[in-house]
Image (cartoon, rainbow, N blue to C red; front, side):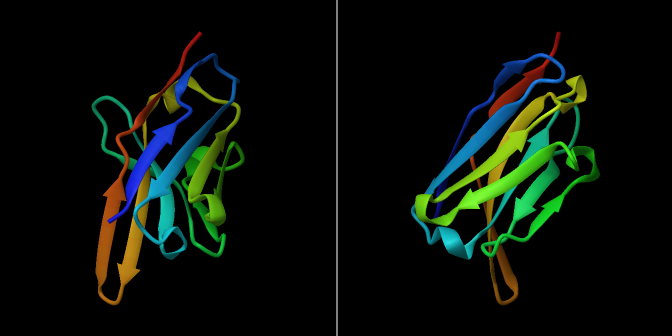
Length: 119
């Protein structure tokens, strides 16, 4: 079982940048598809971006061109660089590790880190 710890959230003005980090332990990091999700008040949790162990990335339309996901397998860490932040990006951001084995999917979640974009 993998444990995930996010860091890097905070408050920023519109147009600013933040870099989120997620450190993983307790599993074989390279075996997991890593992702960032977010949940705004009153809304469902949604995918922001994901990255496979080989580096293939996928982004929600809301973050394309502004957000970049990356991973450092030797450091067991995944990052989310967020630029040109908007007030609507305000949410709790969660790190996700997904292990796909045959027909089963195991999801692991971090505790979340708050991102607030406000002037």
